[in-house]
Image 1 (cartoon, rainbow, N blue to C red):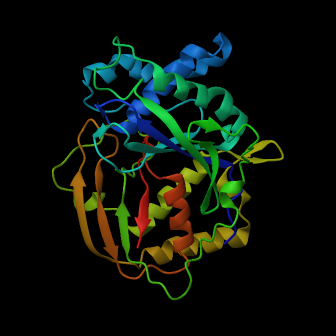
Image 2: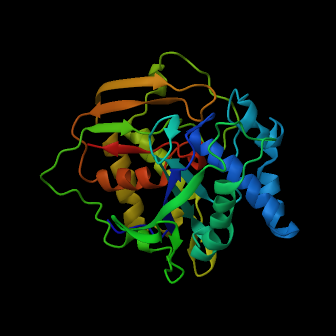
Length: 332
Protein backbone atom coordinates (compact mmCIF):
# COMPACT_ATOMS: atom_id res chain seq x y z
CA UNK A 1 0.00 0.00 0.00
CA UNK A 2 1.12 3.58 -0.54
CA UNK A 3 1.87 5.78 2.46
CA UNK A 4 -0.96 8.13 3.36
CA UNK A 5 -0.49 11.77 2.27
CA UNK A 6 -0.56 13.05 5.83
CA UNK A 7 1.80 15.65 7.25
CA UNK A 8 3.63 14.34 10.30
CA UNK A 9 6.89 15.16 12.09
CA UNK A 10 8.07 12.85 14.86
CA UNK A 11 10.51 14.27 17.43
CA UNK A 12 12.17 11.93 19.92
CA UNK A 13 13.16 14.07 22.91
CA UNK A 14 15.72 12.70 25.37
CA UNK A 15 15.77 14.43 28.77
CA UNK A 16 18.62 13.74 31.18
CA UNK A 17 17.79 14.24 34.87
CA UNK A 18 20.24 16.55 36.63
CA UNK A 19 18.85 16.28 40.19
CA UNK A 20 19.32 13.47 42.74
CA UNK A 21 15.77 12.20 42.18
CA UNK A 22 12.59 13.28 40.36
CA UNK A 23 9.11 11.80 40.31
CA UNK A 24 6.19 11.88 37.92
CA UNK A 25 3.24 12.63 40.18
CA UNK A 26 0.73 12.25 37.34
CA UNK A 27 0.69 10.24 34.10
CA UNK A 28 3.87 11.54 32.34
CA UNK A 29 2.24 12.81 29.10
CA UNK A 30 -0.31 14.70 31.21
CA UNK A 31 2.52 16.44 33.07
CA UNK A 32 4.31 17.32 29.83
CA UNK A 33 1.09 18.52 28.17
CA UNK A 34 -0.03 20.68 31.08
CA UNK A 35 3.40 22.14 31.87
CA UNK A 36 4.42 22.90 28.28
CA UNK A 37 0.93 24.05 27.28
CA UNK A 38 0.85 26.54 30.17
CA UNK A 39 4.35 27.84 29.41
CA UNK A 40 3.45 28.30 25.72
CA UNK A 41 0.22 30.12 26.60
CA UNK A 42 2.14 32.49 28.87
CA UNK A 43 4.97 33.06 26.37
CA UNK A 44 3.14 33.83 23.13
CA UNK A 45 1.72 37.23 22.12
CA UNK A 46 -1.91 37.74 23.11
CA UNK A 47 -3.55 36.81 19.81
CA UNK A 48 -1.39 33.71 19.28
CA UNK A 49 -1.81 32.69 22.91
CA UNK A 50 -5.61 32.80 22.86
CA UNK A 51 -6.16 29.26 21.45
CA UNK A 52 -3.65 27.89 23.98
CA UNK A 53 -5.49 29.55 26.86
CA UNK A 54 -8.78 28.19 25.50
CA UNK A 55 -7.26 24.70 25.31
CA UNK A 56 -6.30 24.97 29.01
CA UNK A 57 -9.90 25.67 30.12
CA UNK A 58 -10.69 22.00 30.96
CA UNK A 59 -7.65 22.02 33.26
CA UNK A 60 -8.51 25.32 34.93
CA UNK A 61 -11.72 23.78 36.26
CA UNK A 62 -9.54 21.21 38.05
CA UNK A 63 -6.96 23.64 39.40
CA UNK A 64 -4.84 24.25 36.32
CA UNK A 65 -1.11 23.70 36.50
CA UNK A 66 -1.33 23.44 40.31
CA UNK A 67 -2.45 19.83 39.67
CA UNK A 68 1.26 19.07 39.24
CA UNK A 69 1.73 20.05 42.88
CA UNK A 70 -1.50 18.77 44.43
CA UNK A 71 -1.83 15.45 42.54
CA UNK A 72 -5.61 15.68 43.01
CA UNK A 73 -6.75 14.33 39.64
CA UNK A 74 -9.57 11.79 39.68
CA UNK A 75 -10.09 11.57 35.93
CA UNK A 76 -8.33 13.33 33.02
CA UNK A 77 -10.52 15.75 31.07
CA UNK A 78 -10.93 15.69 27.30
CA UNK A 79 -8.07 18.17 26.88
CA UNK A 80 -5.62 18.63 24.03
CA UNK A 81 -3.34 21.29 22.66
CA UNK A 82 -4.80 23.59 19.99
CA UNK A 83 -2.54 21.84 17.48
CA UNK A 84 -2.95 18.20 16.45
CA UNK A 85 -0.27 16.47 18.48
CA UNK A 86 0.66 13.33 20.38
CA UNK A 87 2.84 13.24 23.50
CA UNK A 88 4.03 9.65 23.80
CA UNK A 89 6.33 8.92 26.74
CA UNK A 90 8.18 5.67 26.22
CA UNK A 91 7.18 3.12 28.87
CA UNK A 92 9.38 3.64 31.90
CA UNK A 93 9.06 4.18 35.63
CA UNK A 94 7.79 6.78 38.05
CA UNK A 95 11.07 7.77 39.74
CA UNK A 96 14.35 8.72 38.01
CA UNK A 97 17.79 9.39 39.47
CA UNK A 98 20.53 11.75 38.39
CA UNK A 99 21.84 11.00 34.90
CA UNK A 100 18.91 8.78 33.93
CA UNK A 101 17.08 9.40 30.66
CA UNK A 102 13.41 10.12 30.03
CA UNK A 103 12.27 9.54 26.45
CA UNK A 104 9.26 11.31 24.98
CA UNK A 105 8.11 11.32 21.38
CA UNK A 106 6.26 14.42 20.21
CA UNK A 107 4.24 13.96 17.04
CA UNK A 108 3.03 17.07 15.22
CA UNK A 109 0.32 16.28 12.68
CA UNK A 110 -1.43 18.12 9.85
CA UNK A 111 -0.90 21.84 9.34
CA UNK A 112 1.23 22.12 12.48
CA UNK A 113 3.71 19.50 11.27
CA UNK A 114 6.02 22.46 10.83
CA UNK A 115 9.67 22.42 11.90
CA UNK A 116 9.72 26.21 12.32
CA UNK A 117 6.77 25.93 14.71
CA UNK A 118 8.69 23.35 16.75
CA UNK A 119 11.81 25.55 16.90
CA UNK A 120 9.95 28.78 17.66
CA UNK A 121 7.25 27.56 20.05
CA UNK A 122 7.73 24.01 21.38
CA UNK A 123 11.49 23.94 21.92
CA UNK A 124 11.66 27.28 23.83
CA UNK A 125 8.87 26.06 26.11
CA UNK A 126 10.77 22.83 26.72
CA UNK A 127 13.90 24.83 27.55
CA UNK A 128 11.96 26.98 30.03
CA UNK A 129 10.48 23.84 31.62
CA UNK A 130 13.95 22.32 31.96
CA UNK A 131 15.29 25.17 34.08
CA UNK A 132 12.23 26.63 35.84
CA UNK A 133 11.62 25.79 39.49
CA UNK A 134 8.39 27.34 40.72
CA UNK A 135 7.05 26.03 44.02
CA UNK A 136 3.61 27.53 43.30
CA UNK A 137 2.92 24.63 40.90
CA UNK A 138 5.72 22.15 41.56
CA UNK A 139 6.55 19.66 44.26
CA UNK A 140 10.12 19.46 45.54
CA UNK A 141 10.60 16.18 43.66
CA UNK A 142 8.98 17.19 40.36
CA UNK A 143 10.84 16.88 37.06
CA UNK A 144 10.43 20.52 36.10
CA UNK A 145 13.59 22.61 36.37
CA UNK A 146 15.72 19.51 36.88
CA UNK A 147 16.65 18.15 33.45
CA UNK A 148 18.77 18.86 30.40
CA UNK A 149 17.59 18.44 26.82
CA UNK A 150 20.31 15.93 26.04
CA UNK A 151 19.24 14.89 22.53
CA UNK A 152 16.43 15.39 20.04
CA UNK A 153 16.03 13.13 17.01
CA UNK A 154 13.65 13.44 14.06
CA UNK A 155 12.19 10.39 12.34
CA UNK A 156 13.09 9.74 8.72
CA UNK A 157 11.22 6.56 7.88
CA UNK A 158 12.56 3.83 10.19
CA UNK A 159 15.64 5.89 11.14
CA UNK A 160 16.29 8.95 13.30
CA UNK A 161 18.20 12.10 12.27
CA UNK A 162 19.98 14.12 14.96
CA UNK A 163 18.62 17.61 15.70
CA UNK A 164 20.12 18.15 19.18
CA UNK A 165 23.33 16.35 20.15
CA UNK A 166 24.66 16.63 23.70
CA UNK A 167 22.53 19.75 24.36
CA UNK A 168 23.68 21.43 21.10
CA UNK A 169 21.05 22.36 18.48
CA UNK A 170 21.81 21.92 14.78
CA UNK A 171 20.26 25.07 13.31
CA UNK A 172 21.02 23.94 9.77
CA UNK A 173 18.79 20.89 10.02
CA UNK A 174 15.34 21.26 8.45
CA UNK A 175 12.70 18.59 9.03
CA UNK A 176 9.95 18.12 6.43
CA UNK A 177 6.38 16.90 7.07
CA UNK A 178 6.79 14.00 4.64
CA UNK A 179 10.13 12.51 5.74
CA UNK A 180 8.41 10.29 8.32
CA UNK A 181 7.38 8.01 5.46
CA UNK A 182 10.67 7.99 3.51
CA UNK A 183 11.81 4.39 3.19
CA UNK A 184 9.13 3.20 5.61
CA UNK A 185 8.23 -0.34 4.60
CA UNK A 186 4.84 -1.36 5.95
CA UNK A 187 4.93 -4.78 4.29
CA UNK A 188 6.43 -7.27 6.77
CA UNK A 189 7.05 -9.88 4.06
CA UNK A 190 5.42 -13.20 3.42
CA UNK A 191 7.51 -15.32 5.78
CA UNK A 192 6.60 -13.70 9.11
CA UNK A 193 3.38 -14.43 10.96
CA UNK A 194 1.88 -11.88 13.37
CA UNK A 195 -0.58 -12.87 16.06
CA UNK A 196 0.19 -10.86 19.21
CA UNK A 197 -0.97 -7.27 19.70
CA UNK A 198 0.41 -5.63 22.86
CA UNK A 199 -1.02 -2.29 23.95
CA UNK A 200 1.94 -0.28 25.26
CA UNK A 201 -0.22 2.67 26.33
CA UNK A 202 -3.74 2.65 27.78
CA UNK A 203 -6.56 2.48 25.26
CA UNK A 204 -10.23 3.39 25.05
CA UNK A 205 -11.81 2.90 21.64
CA UNK A 206 -14.94 4.94 22.27
CA UNK A 207 -15.71 7.70 19.77
CA UNK A 208 -13.13 10.49 20.00
CA UNK A 209 -15.84 13.12 20.50
CA UNK A 210 -17.58 11.28 23.33
CA UNK A 211 -17.86 13.32 26.52
CA UNK A 212 -19.42 10.48 28.52
CA UNK A 213 -16.96 9.22 31.15
CA UNK A 214 -16.26 5.50 30.79
CA UNK A 215 -17.41 3.10 33.44
CA UNK A 216 -14.47 1.64 35.27
CA UNK A 217 -14.42 -2.07 36.03
CA UNK A 218 -11.85 -4.27 37.70
CA UNK A 219 -12.43 -6.78 34.93
CA UNK A 220 -12.95 -5.98 31.26
CA UNK A 221 -16.49 -6.61 30.07
CA UNK A 222 -16.89 -8.79 26.94
CA UNK A 223 -18.22 -5.88 24.87
CA UNK A 224 -15.10 -3.84 25.71
CA UNK A 225 -12.63 -6.33 24.24
CA UNK A 226 -11.46 -4.78 20.94
CA UNK A 227 -11.65 -6.94 17.84
CA UNK A 228 -9.37 -6.37 14.86
CA UNK A 229 -12.35 -4.87 13.04
CA UNK A 230 -12.94 -2.37 15.85
CA UNK A 231 -9.27 -1.39 15.88
CA UNK A 232 -9.35 -0.78 12.12
CA UNK A 233 -12.59 1.21 12.37
CA UNK A 234 -10.95 3.30 15.10
CA UNK A 235 -8.01 3.85 12.74
CA UNK A 236 -10.42 5.03 10.01
CA UNK A 237 -12.12 7.41 12.47
CA UNK A 238 -8.71 8.72 13.51
CA UNK A 239 -7.68 9.34 9.92
CA UNK A 240 -10.93 11.15 9.15
CA UNK A 241 -10.41 13.41 12.16
CA UNK A 242 -7.06 14.63 10.84
CA UNK A 243 -6.62 17.34 8.25
CA UNK A 244 -5.18 16.27 4.92
CA UNK A 245 -3.81 19.19 2.94
CA UNK A 246 -4.40 18.89 -0.76
CA UNK A 247 -4.17 22.07 -2.83
CA UNK A 248 -4.56 24.03 0.43
CA UNK A 249 -7.90 22.36 1.23
CA UNK A 250 -8.84 20.31 4.28
CA UNK A 251 -9.98 16.92 3.02
CA UNK A 252 -10.98 13.79 4.91
CA UNK A 253 -8.96 10.62 4.53
CA UNK A 254 -11.96 8.73 3.12
CA UNK A 255 -12.45 11.40 0.44
CA UNK A 256 -8.98 11.01 -1.04
CA UNK A 257 -9.38 7.27 -1.58
CA UNK A 258 -10.37 6.07 -5.02
CA UNK A 259 -13.52 3.98 -5.39
CA UNK A 260 -11.31 0.92 -5.77
CA UNK A 261 -9.35 1.79 -2.62
CA UNK A 262 -12.57 2.34 -0.65
CA UNK A 263 -13.91 -1.04 -1.75
CA UNK A 264 -10.59 -2.65 -0.84
CA UNK A 265 -10.61 -0.96 2.59
CA UNK A 266 -14.18 -2.11 3.27
CA UNK A 267 -13.31 -5.67 2.26
CA UNK A 268 -10.25 -5.57 4.50
CA UNK A 269 -12.35 -4.48 7.47
CA UNK A 270 -14.83 -7.26 6.80
CA UNK A 271 -12.04 -9.81 6.52
CA UNK A 272 -10.82 -8.66 9.93
CA UNK A 273 -14.18 -9.80 11.32
CA UNK A 274 -13.18 -13.37 10.54
CA UNK A 275 -10.02 -13.26 12.66
CA UNK A 276 -10.82 -14.64 16.12
CA UNK A 277 -9.02 -13.63 19.29
CA UNK A 278 -7.55 -16.72 20.94
CA UNK A 279 -6.48 -15.08 24.18
CA UNK A 280 -6.62 -11.71 25.90
CA UNK A 281 -5.16 -10.41 29.13
CA UNK A 282 -6.21 -6.90 30.17
CA UNK A 283 -5.67 -4.76 33.25
CA UNK A 284 -7.53 -1.58 34.26
CA UNK A 285 -5.45 1.58 34.54
CA UNK A 286 -5.83 4.01 37.43
CA UNK A 287 -8.75 6.40 37.10
CA UNK A 288 -6.29 9.32 37.17
CA UNK A 289 -4.80 8.05 33.90
CA UNK A 290 -6.29 8.51 30.44
CA UNK A 291 -7.65 5.47 28.68
CA UNK A 292 -9.23 2.48 30.40
CA UNK A 293 -7.23 -0.67 29.79
CA UNK A 294 -3.80 -1.99 28.95
CA UNK A 295 -2.80 -5.52 28.05
CA UNK A 296 -2.17 -8.05 25.32
CA UNK A 297 -4.27 -9.86 22.73
CA UNK A 298 -3.44 -12.99 20.77
CA UNK A 299 -5.32 -13.53 17.52
CA UNK A 300 -5.34 -16.22 14.91
CA UNK A 301 -2.72 -15.33 12.24
CA UNK A 302 -3.47 -11.77 11.11
CA UNK A 303 -3.97 -11.50 7.30
CA UNK A 304 -1.08 -9.77 5.54
CA UNK A 305 -3.39 -7.23 3.90
CA UNK A 306 -4.36 -5.84 7.33
CA UNK A 307 -0.85 -5.44 8.75
CA UNK A 308 0.11 -2.17 6.98
CA UNK A 309 -3.01 -0.44 8.30
CA UNK A 310 -2.33 -1.71 11.81
CA UNK A 311 1.23 -0.39 11.51
CA UNK A 312 -0.13 3.06 10.61
CA UNK A 313 -2.65 2.87 13.45
CA UNK A 314 0.24 2.31 15.88
CA UNK A 315 2.03 5.41 14.54
CA UNK A 316 -1.00 7.74 14.66
CA UNK A 317 -2.67 6.19 17.76
CA UNK A 318 -6.37 5.33 17.97
CA UNK A 319 -9.32 5.92 20.27
CA UNK A 320 -9.67 8.54 22.99
CA UNK A 321 -6.87 10.66 24.53
CA UNK A 322 -4.45 10.20 21.62
CA UNK A 323 -2.90 13.55 22.65
CA UNK A 324 -1.64 11.81 25.80
CA UNK A 325 -0.18 8.94 23.75
CA UNK A 326 -3.06 6.54 24.33
CA UNK A 327 -4.00 3.89 21.80
CA UNK A 328 -0.73 2.58 20.43
CA UNK A 329 0.60 -0.96 20.33
CA UNK A 330 3.24 -3.28 18.93
CA UNK A 331 2.65 -6.35 16.73
CA UNK A 332 4.60 -9.54 17.14
